[in-house]
Image (cartoon, rainbow over all chains, first blue to last red; front, side):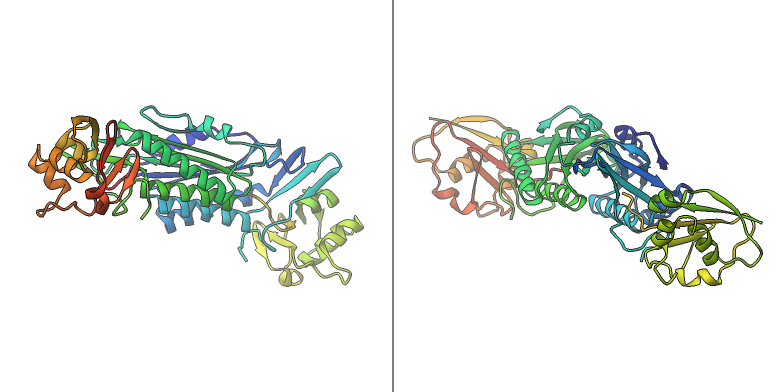
Length: 140
Length: 140
Length: 92
Length: 92
């Protein structure tokens, strides 16, 4: 499942569904809203393009790390402290591929998927600067 | 929660409980019984020592990677294909620490915690050889 | 002919989004964005420097495909095109 | 005086586990394990080579603390001790 959505997901159910034949290791990454003195996080995506980019990343990760299953769910909208922002579930035969595949996916998302975050505070808000100078379809 | 037990756990609930103040990233490792032509996996532990070793590993991982929360649940007994063997949940402020801490814990478990696995097949069974020549309390 | 311009994040806050605008044949991506962004000086300044050159961090897409900033003056827009203009991404 | 010997995994299958045995003062870890393992030649062969030396992969513990194989002949056991003997670990 590759999705950009406002709602949360049941990670336990995703893990169960990720147990494809041959699975020996599952790695889940869950990015959550950190309480950096903020009241809320506002997330925005160029949805059609972002979904296509996530699909491309999932496909490339599957190929490179021989993954057996990939889920990427990125949430948008307003999220409170502690809420899930991004959930990545990957399964593989063995743990090195599962860890490496999971890490590859998050790094590629940070680099090139058109999603933005704004930290809302009592005094206003601040758009989180990207970790990479560029981005949007093409890693630089 | 550090435990060696026969029963399964609710990973979703563990993730929720792992969201300690300051958490920005949670990484879950779930090792499952792979369908390598086996009917079941039989797991055995030197329980008192294994729990102490797991506690030591969790403590060292927390220190080294500034983790905010660690769960390690290793199951024993007879497990079918696809069942969870080992669940590691770690939370950290940022993803590099979460991934590195999770990976550190699984590698240390493989090295030195007195737990053994036997693959049961229709023709009998085979004790899984350790990945490390030695082990049991002291990584070599 | 009509094109749609989508701004995101800070650019959206300053300039709005999903802006449908009529353009004449031969309009370039660069002139289109310049014109639209001039509706709000702060929006224009967010995207262009004082010489009217794109800030190097700005990202452009036409119909979901990346267009290099240097090509924007040579890229024409056509009826039904969707143009996206946004700052560096920060998902995850 | 009584000690408890715990074998694990393949050693357990061959020799049993949680074996309570009476020992005389001065009994060493090595002689204790040799004696107990001789109850089953296959069990003995799993732990010792043909010269009666521990296979290098064998792991010994006394009361939860690792004892190096080379020290087993100089380590005496005392009443209430728990001795563990096992093959390389394979958890995870």
